[in-house]
Image (cartoon, rainbow, N blue to C red; front, side):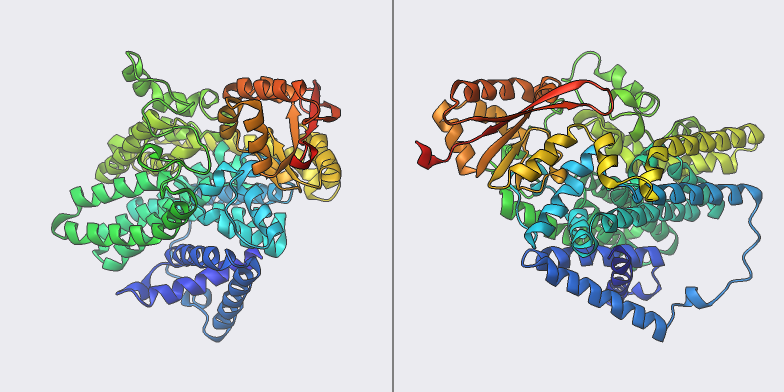
Amino acid sequence: MSLILIPASWLTGLALMRTLPGGRGMPALAVLLSGLAVLGAVSAASGAYSLNVALALCIGAGVACLGYFIYRPPRWLVEDDDDDPPLDWLTRTMIGAVVLSLAMALLASLAPVTSWDAAVAHIALPSDYSLAGHIYFEDGNVYGGYPHLAHTLYAVAYHGGGERSVTLLNWLLAGAALWALYALGAEIGGPRVGWIAAAMLACAPIFADQAGGVSIDLPFTAFSTASVWLLARWFRTQTLADVLVAGMLAGAACGIRHTGYLCAVLLAVGLLLGGGKERFRAVAAFAGMAFLFALPWLVRSAVYTGNPFFPLFAEWFPPSPIPHQAITGLGLHESTEPLGWRTAWLWLRFPWDIIMRPQDYDGWSKSPGGLVLILGVPGLFAGGRAARTLGLYGAAGGTALFLFQRLARYLLPFFAAGMVVAALAVERIERCRVLIRVVLIGGLIYGLALHAAAIHFKVPVALGLQSREDYLESRVERYGMFEYANEQLVDGRVLSVDQRTYYLRPRAFQNHWALPGVAGLPPDAQRAWLLHNGIRHILFPTNFVMQSGGVRDAMLALRETWRADPEHYPLRSVLNLTDPRTGDAERVEVYDVAPEDSD
């Protein structure tokens, strides 16, 4: 199914480009991504009624596109430009690194999904939608109110082809992120700069972590980086279509991740400051299209949660049906700290810390790699005005996230811009050229080695030498708890403290931000809340709760209520499991919630 979405998006993008002045000459990547944005919005609207309808629309568009290709092949498919100069050894090396990284990611995408973010949201929601047959508002999953472009596309892919269809679509979008970075680098410094920048991303730990599973950060990077590329192109061509499509992609990025709003604002400011005589027209065109393509996702969040920017700016809107932590105040997010006398020093250190010490923020697997810093700093001086502009873009985005959410994966679009700056250093610094290239190639080899190490355990299951169940049991903590629930807890909704509800077939409630409020209620009100939400069973993994930070006290308080009232909360079972990663024992308590007619 994921292979159908690509030609379907291409045909949709072609139709869209025909409506824009100068749009017929748009590059292939811009056509594809803009079509994907439109297809996502159409799928969200039709999928709310039935995913079968959304699937039929996508298949119809895909088949029509294949027929169109046969009838009228695109010029770039049938023409070979013999005037291109031969590739030098460095460019060939960069292309080889990109191809090798993509090949390893493709192999990893054949293994079952085990990443936390995917099992909590990125494939958990699509699988729930597919099971229900339509896209609905899942109030038990906090991410059900978030921007939904990627989740909608994944839902259509899952409904049409299951898990592997989603992982393959994610892999294709990871390739689009590399393509966008290449296009930006080639626009600013030539094809070799583009390939160097793409190779840096392809060999970064975060690419290995996310390209072979299910994520939204690489799709988000594809859209946001392509928007930067088209604006850079506009400064050369002064073609209105470039600004319009850049706005489309920036707005679509807002439908994937909230960071898209920040990217769009920064790009609009950049246009206003550097757009020359056409600045006001360009900003109006960019902002109008960005708003139009973000609008479906703003409306969706507004309808379901009462807040178009959910969960941002919660203090401006009525209480949401999905409880959520405050994240838009300075220093409120768990990854930050209140402003104080150390703030300025931590801000100065932030670029070094989040790149070279990512375990303190988002884990080493989310690092963009050290090359973006080691070569990016000299690139600011050697790369000219374009490098300094990209540096300002990255610095502004990094500062905003330093104040609100210090997560490396949220910074990926800004790191991508930094990779172009680093590639300019390789291209333009004459002194120490040999040393710089040794550092570059050494860094890429190191990144590919880490990529190979990160996926080696996936090879047996990807090649069919290990069963899916054996693999999941060896890689997913508490997988036995999910298996038990799937076999025994089929008569009601399950409250799962472990939020990886992708592995649960019964409908689940996993929003732990609701639990502190529930724990503060009287016992009768606690039970009324559980029954109101359809919860009939509770999964309580003791070790996980003790290590879960902010939700621990609330969960322990709730357990005391259940233990004190066995009539209404009978202990159904106790599971004694072993953590496959550490070998530690873990006790899982399974409680039932007695229905109202038992009183």
